[in-house]
Each structure stands twice: as C-alpha cells, then as structure tokens.
Length: 425
Image (spheres, rainbow, N blue to C red):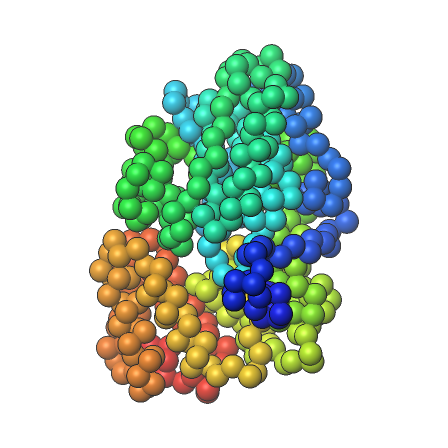
C-alpha cells in the first residue's frame, strides 16, 4: 500500500531502519464478506476443499461457479467458468494463480496472500479440481517477499495436513502446488507474458490465438486466474453459485476488493458489492481526502484504467458503467489526486509509466509510449500527429497495455477539462 512519507519511511530510505511493508487496513462493506471471509473471520477454506474433493464431482464445482457469474478480477473480466471449461479437462492442464499485482495503488492480492494464503491455495485447488488439473502454480510479485514466504509456508502446511499430494481426502486425482516469484515486469501480469516468463523467456505478450487454454505453459492447456478471483471460489462452492449471483448487479455479480490510496482519510482495502456508487466508496468508506484536501481527479483501476472528475463519482462501480466514462474497473485501486498537483504533471506521470513498463514486443506501444512522453515533457501542445499516434496505439498494440493507454490519456484530459485541452488527441 502507498504510505505517506513520514519519519518511519524516511528512516527506511536512509538505511536507519530495516525496510518493511506497512500493514493493510481491511474492512467489509457487504455484511457478509466473500474474499475477506478469512481475513475478517475464521472460516477455514481447506474444510470446504476437503468436503468438495471427497464428496462432489468436478462438474458440480464448475456448474456452481458458472451459476455465480464470477468474472476475472485481474482486469479482463472474462467469465471464470467459461475459461475453465475451455481447458476441457485435457491431460496435463495447469492452473496458475496470478499474484503479479503491478497496478500502483492496488494491494488486494498482497493482502490476501499475506493475511489469508490458505484461501488463495484452496481456491486454486478447487480450480484445479474443476479443470482436471493435477498441477497448480502461484506466481507472486517479486516486490512481495513476505507474501512469497508466507505462500510457500502455506503450501508446506497444506501438504503436511493432507490437503495436497496423492489423492487428497480420497479424491480421484493427485494435486501439487508450487509457488514461484515473478520477475518484476508490469506487463508480465498479462497471461501470455506471464506464461512466457514462467518458461524462462522475456515477459512479453504473445499474439492470440492460440489461447492459453488451448496451448499455454509448455504447450499444455493453461488456465490463468487472478488471486482475488480464486479467493472467491471457496465461498461460492460452500454457499452456492446462486447466493453469489444475488450479490452485486444482474450483469456483474458478486463483490470486489477496492484499494484506497494514502490521500484518503481512511486508506485501506474494502470489500464492496459491484454496483456500489464510487462516491459512497470515496466519501463514506474512505472518509474523503485527508487534511481537508479537495479531490481534483480520481484514478480508477490503475494507471491505464482511467480517470474520473469529481462530478462523475456517482457512477456505479461496474465495468459497464465505468466504460461509459472511458474508464475501466481493472484491479479497482482508487488513487486520489488533489488540486495541488498540476494536471500536466499527472499526464506526464501516465506517459512515464507507459514508457517504463512497455515490454517492447510491438512497435505501436514501444514507440508510441516514448513519443508521447517526449511530447508531454516538451510542454508544447500536440498536433495531429499526436492524435494519430494515440489511434494507432489503441488499434494496433499487441496487448491491453498499449491499447488501454489512449483511453487513460483521454479520460484524464476529459476529467481536467480546459486545463488539459488539446492533449486528448
């Protein structure tokens, strides 16, 4: 989580104190948490796994997840059951828990892996069961050393308790889970880049088809799900898909972890139902901005997710409603930008992030991100060539990283209005 640069952080940076990550405040705004059921309560997800694998079939698990309407929480929002079914139970199928959380302002995956690693592993085990996979992998972001250690400890504990290994709990298949560290690249969180990284190559996006569910890690069918996505599966299997589908909205069911940045009076990770007005999250859950500061724009879903003006905060927190304003749900990290920061500085930060994190696999993103940064650093209002560059990036980039950047730029320009006139292309 982003923290204020107080004495403790200053001591860490100066080498006077040992580096350590701050604790993450967590809260539930739903009345019955799904992914925070273990963080805020005492539910044991391994009991759900044991009962499921010993008494139920993979088809039942798949049908419950399908009935829930659960979609991926890593940003793409693809129906989880459809992805599992696409792997088709093929021999050698692998399921990967993607904990390579790279969005600035997002720390939901870190919270889950550090505070409730058993839920992540049990969700992964249930996904493997439903997909007919005998092997699961957890990829942990390299900047999360504590999460990496705790996840590995949780795997060893699960194996010692009989949840993994040969025919756990009398089930019909073996299951092994391995935890590996990521390589630090933002783009490596994209599933094809993640697979390339696990194979020992560069973490660059690959053209699709073939899709990973057909030919993924080492050319076997591969399912990649975000950590938060998998953490919802034990609750769904235990309570039923219909119970989950009653949460959220009819088109986008369930709950979502929302991370609030340090500029909020009450920063932390909150579980909310999809469809909750963003204004309620900002003002009630977050308490507004600290020190009486006034919100200028709100970044939603990471640096490439989008931006909202203060007058747009009544939008429901759903992918569809945010898309109507040129934003995206993404990881649902909310970063508040107050009026003290110059709009052009915010725009430059977006381009700096894009230029630093582009994997370079395709020319539109590799060249465009650097040209955009050069233009904004010059401070000279752009011309037609800048607008053409944004259109090419949005249409021809290989993955969502390059394709989303023009939306983020235009959303920021729209949110600031006249103060960034001409910078939207």
